[in-house]
Every structure is written in structure tokens, then in C-alpha cells.
Length: 284
View 1 (tube, one colour):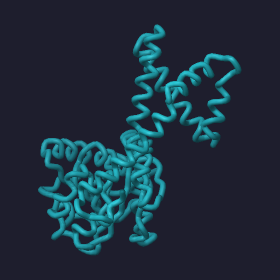
View 2 (cartoon, one colour):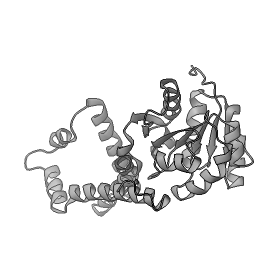
View 3 (cartoon, helix red, strand yellow):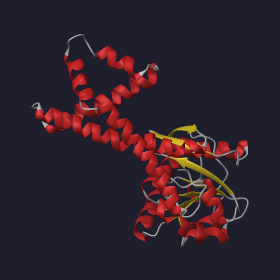
View 4 (cartoon, one colour):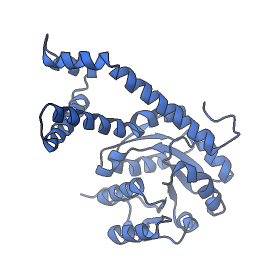
């Protein structure tokens, strides 16, 4: 049965993959009327196609999205935030809630640009949201009432799971779950390449690698075990698995992953400084 509908109007500035994933999740769960979803994108053809497919309302510009909505999701790239926020500033009032999904952009930066006109929520979803298995982190900084926070969470739950975190951890979240799907995809590709080297047909190698990652993630999630325990379960004394692990460790596998995640977090911080040059309060 469809869930109880949320009585509000939801707007999207930007109608790319993440925005469309949120729309599809909301529509699939039936929590907001399709006629109460508004969107604008500079790619008019993409917007028209999405509107025809989902039945959402295509706005003429960003200000029309804001004027037509209670909650506005800013689904544009970090480097477009300054321009978009300056554009919609005059259309905002204290009743609006802005939801950011961009890496590195702080709530303080957004509030400064819009003149502290409304409430701002910073989130970090990831691409598995496209299939309803996303991981979204949310930092509200107590700016929303409990009722408002519940509504925002309900919207984000249409993508998968939601975790509340302090905003100070959002760059680290970006480095782990925001960018993490790319690391996992790279690992799967490498596993499949190894299988091809060992003689497997490529399509079979990909199917084996993908299902192995899916199954292992599900096992860890459902059993609640430490990853090291699962590694030990598979590693027989003197066996093939421990030989492969020995080689991975010799090549610095874990260290490379740790350093990659840390580099990503640093880059996320740098994006915030670039978007807001000259602001000493940006994280470093």
C-alpha cells in the first residue's frame, strides 16, 4: 500500500541523475503528489522528457521552482551554487527549506549568500540511490523542527538509508559513501580483469565479481560482523585466499584505500574553499 502522503510542494533546481532518482523514489513510494513536484534544468530537452515520463511540473526558471515549492532541493554541481543562490535569493522567504546535495558546500556558505532567509539542510547522497539502495547522510544543525526534519528524512528515505551526522563530518562522509561507489566499481573492474587474466570470459568475470560484492555487503549488513571476521572465515590455513590477501597487503592495498579516502575528504574541503574564496571559516 502507498505510504501516507506528505502535504507539501517539492522543488528541484537541476534535474540530473540524483534529482531524478529522488523524484522516482518519491513517486514510487507515493509520499508526495506528482503534481506537487516542480523542477527546472538548463537542459530544456532533458526537463521536458522527465516531465513527460514522470508527470512532474516543468518550471520556466529557478525562481518559479522556489515560488512554487515549500522544500527546494539544490541538485546542481558545487561550482554552480553561487550563481544559482544569487538567482533565487529574492524568491526565498523564511518558510522555505533548502536541501543541498553538493560536496564541500557548507550550510554557512549557503546562508551567507541568501542572507539567512530560510532553513538549510546539508546532505550527501550517493549513486546507488538510482536503484533505491543509496546511503544519504544528513546534517541539519538543529535548524529544523522535529516535524520538518522528519519530512526531509522521509523524502531522502526514498533513496535508501539515511544517517544523521554533524556537519563537521560531511567531508569524511563524501569520501566514504559519496565517492565510494566509484572505488567499489573500480575494484569490481579490477577483479574481473584478474578473472580474465586467469582465463574467464569477461562477461562471466563481471557477473562473478559483481555478485560477490553484493553478497559480501549483504552478509556484513545482516550478520553485523566485523569485516575482518568475514575475511578470516574465507581464509583457510595455507590456502588460496590467504595467498591473495598476502599479495594485496604486499602491494599496500589497504593503505592505498585509506589514503584515497583521505585525499577525497581533503578535496571536498577544498571545494568548499573554492566556492567561498576568502572565507577563513571554511574547513581546512
